[in-house]
Length: 239
Length: 331
Image (cartoon, rainbow over the protein chains, first blue to last red):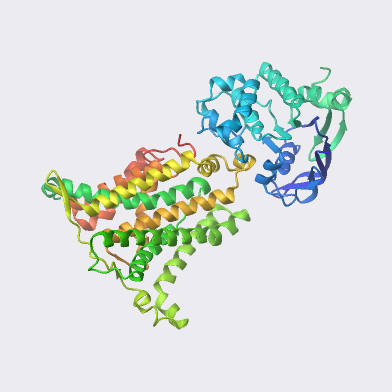
């Protein structure tokens, strides 16, 4: 098992953001956490990356307990995240943002990064056109591509994507999800957090539904997409 | 008003202002960089500078430099004193980060608490220097180090002959070797730091943390390390500024950091806090403005003019002259 989250509870201030959460991400799959705003999806991803303190439970990566592993070490181990709201560095150019993605790599010279640049710029040709521009000048969709591309520069085994469809036009959403599929088919395991349940479930090998910090349903993407309660609450009736 | 005096001596007042402005700028960089990564005013930075002034004097005592030292030996002594001052100031800055800030920030203390901690650390450092005589006496070491710790609350002077010699004239004003050394080394060091932040890996880490600390962690930037390096750079520059200050002013005491620290902080805000190039510009503008103001209204008005300039600039440009933050500064 690449990632295993066991009985995880995390507080956000005095509020319990997630409670007794357990799920697994097998190597090579796409796993998705769906749920409404405030269900605890982003907190889960932040905790896996080491940005939030665990109150109870544990996170295992390749069987290793991450409790005492620093956030930068986790990136080195292969856990890379494209955060909610994209978190691009607005004052750096597109190229510099991508280089930031490779910050932890030991082989950071131009030659070693060339194949990764090529991979990212092939997935996202728009970024090639914008490579020298300050990232703050990019459109929302381009910033999302940059955030995903930047996460790939670390050569992750596990890619954490937090709401990649947020604020994007339907056509762009479709394109982003197609690229996520392609990244997965190239061998990267994906843990995807989404409010856009329809798109996420279509691609997911396995899916979990979160409500107020707890998992209330789980199954394959297709099973959850067919679940009456999920359809009513998250898929806008009979889509 | 002594307009005629200012007009007659414009060049000399201007260059004198540039010299002090360079010192403000070097110290301002420490304030502005720490602010950039932590959104915290490191009020103890003035003491980091003050320790550098004493390190300069003590380093010269140590190698036996005195008023008879001339020529290459004089240059060498000064260079040695600067290296020691940079090491001591850098060390004090690192210690500050470790003792006064990191434990607080780790526990998620509000910025205001860290600010109080900074003010407290400032008093502690200043008084340790001011009480060095009694402290060494308690340890029974005051006889051996008498020259270093005697009259701890009085002024301590540079042991060297600091008399400058005029190198060339601009518009009738003689520019001395001392003016040149101070302005050139200050500008050179600021350019070095600017390039360091733009080109190196850890420099890029500093910019990333300044723009978005949480995302920086996701990129694997070790924020503790970045904060340490930021304090260290600020300390090294304050140490260099301390030696140049001693060359210019010639005396220091345990509370000598206060006024210079306030001025340097003013320079940082004037240029746009968080902005490296703003610190340089703010320092030079402040130095020249207060020197011209002192010439115009009398030297007791120097500080009034300095802060009037700050208020005026902030009225029209609330984010300072250059405004942009450290993070947004572009390569």
